[in-house]
Image (cartoon, rainbow, N blue to C red):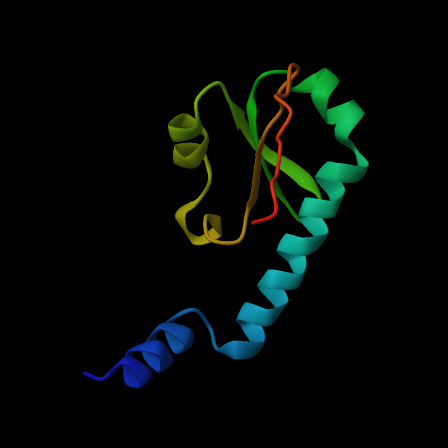
Length: 96
């Protein structure tokens, strides 16, 4: 099977291009939800992993593997996941 046919099969398996576009838009909104509600989420879920879907925390856990086990398999691809770190490490980016 060539790569184009395989890609088409995967897209169709995921519900088609429009479905994927909608899921990606929801992922973007869920990521914004985490940013906009950071303080509130941090106080409620400090040092835990959270999974957000449709602007709701659908699961939380101490370990990422436990969190992913709690998220329904059909939702894992497009669920926003974040560790609510109370002591984040600064990142230094260098232009090359």
